[in-house]
Structures are given as C-alpha cells and as structure tokens.
Length: 185
Image (cartoon, rainbow, N blue to C red; front, side, top):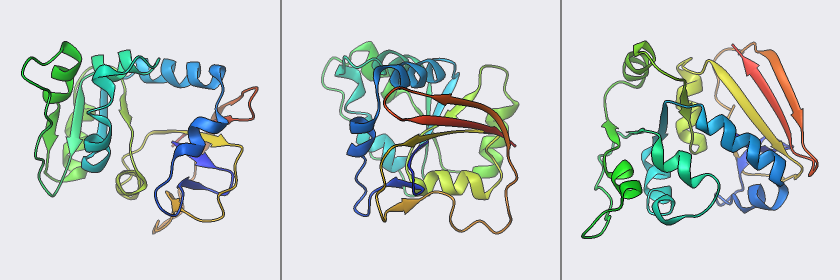
C-alpha cells in the first residue's frame, strides 16, 4: 500500500498521482517483483472498475503480472462487467474471467487462504483495505512510504477497534526517497 509520510493513501479528492511523481525505477522494480509473487490479486469493485480497462493495453512494467495473475473482485453492490470489445485479447480475458465474490468477506478470504498456491495480494482503495484490516485478514503489510506530505486525505488505518501489533520484517530505501516497511502480524 502506497502512503504519504503523513499516512494517507489518497488525497482529499482521491488523488493518487503523487505515487507516480515520487517513485523511481528501483522502487517500481521492487513493486513489480512483489506483484509477480502473487497467486491471486484481490480488490474491491471500485478499484477493479477503474483499472480493468487500463491494464490489457498497457505497456507498463506492471502490465504483465497484472494481466497474467488471476483476479478476484469483492463487491456488495454487484458488478456490471467490463467491455473488452468484440475480440478480447488474452490480457482482457484475464480481467473478464475475474472471480466475483459478494459473500462474507472474512469467510471468503478464509476460503481463498485455505487453497494451495502463492500468496494473495490485496490492492485497492482505502475502504477495501480498511475492511481487510478490520477483519484481521492481512498477514503481511508492505507499506510504501512516498516522500510527500498531503496534509489531508484518505487514511487506511483509521477506525480500528483494537491496536494491531506488527513485527518489522524488512526495510528497503530507494534512491528517490521512497521507503518500504514490511511488517508481519
């Protein structure tokens, strides 16, 4: 999860452009490598609807893992689907074939975790992440702290009913000033 120094994952109007202004090639390579390790990418509906049309035609370094790794979409409000055109590319098909999950978050994540395979990578907005954190479903955090202070915005750790004690497992410092703190529960 990318965060500002003052703990926001998006600006007051949902802005995330600062993430791309403050990263560097080494931090991006690290993020791509972490993404490649996933066996499943999970996200909320809002994030899915925003990014699904982008990745199938992207040439960004993230495109290959984003298009190749299976995806699951969590929604309580239904999902209208995505338009992949008359002849979908294999990359578009990977998004069309995303598993749509609308049941109990804790139960569904528990079932996914019980399956054999690589780690599950959660991406998305503050709301989806707060739901995962609030239910105690996160086993590891990679907090990517960007060298920017937003002043206000969307926090991810507000609303916790109990403290979450974490163990620092790794720290990486990148030339552009981005620092990754990896924590396990």
